[in-house]
Length: 408
Ligand code: ADP
Ligand code: MG
Image: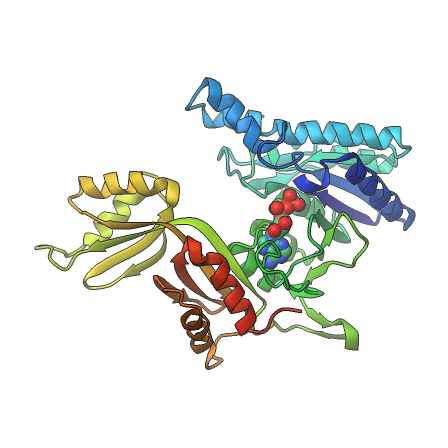
């Protein structure tokens, strides 16, 4: 059986027109001889009645600190609602469909509520549906642990559901339908002339996604990559080809395939960060102070990033909403950090940039020309990032996009 997984994001299931589009897409895929498995996210975005954030607010109105298990239960309802609605819509429009919760679809996870990992998939019920020409509509973003507790997979988790099902069913393709035309050189909400990439390697998209391009969840890419199942990121709204994610890049116009990453693939951004700077130059006994700091942060469950340890300073970032907690923790070990709220990370991402001279010079040039102060910077084999103040974030993304001539 040739199978395609088709995942529809929150913005793709919200209106009657979109449901009609989904029906047309599924119908067209089936008529090409594929068995279709659909994965859905919760309908809409924050403030919409059944969006995940709305459900979280509902429970927090009655209990400020619900258990993680109950939070997962309420959060899983968004996909439940959109899945049942879509399955019924398809049935009423002549496509046989059946709703399956994550648990019914056989998605077994660990018990890490709120950010569970899929351990394995038992796709028996899905296979039964497909054998009877029924389209399973699976609630994304959720599963159940081995004791049957409902778990959720973290933000963007429906992408992960789609990939896990793709692997479990040895699918031909995983389609990620969303509200943009594909993976682009930057977020089109910030960069007007961002360009859709025809193709991209797993490696490149993983890096983009980890650096903040939320168009697909990095874990979803890692799972699909293990079995070399191609992913297509495409728009629900039109029939454009979207972006093909696979092991190789393609020069579509010349019909050339090459297993090579691009020098610079795109520009990403992550906001809501706070930079924490601890001056240790005047400490009497600073031996091992970095160990004390990071152990204390870990003990409080505060995740730290962009770490620079220097002889006189320790610098790192935390999420903005953890800044107060961080200050308290550091205060308890006798340290007074300087904390800069409302920072953002902008990064140029390119899996082939390593060893190419002049890339950092261009980054610095883009920042200087636009009067953007770099608060901190760092690099790896596949990216160079700068921390800037959040008010400079959009300007910095646009400047880098222009400097590396990524636009159309
Ligand atoms: P869905 O609800 O379909 O899962 P998401 O909001 O998770 O959609 O992801 C799509 C959004 O990702 C787009 O609306 C776009 O603003 C954003 N985005 C960020 N970076 C990129 C990028 N490089 N390419 C395409 N979209 C991007
Ligand atoms: Mg998403």
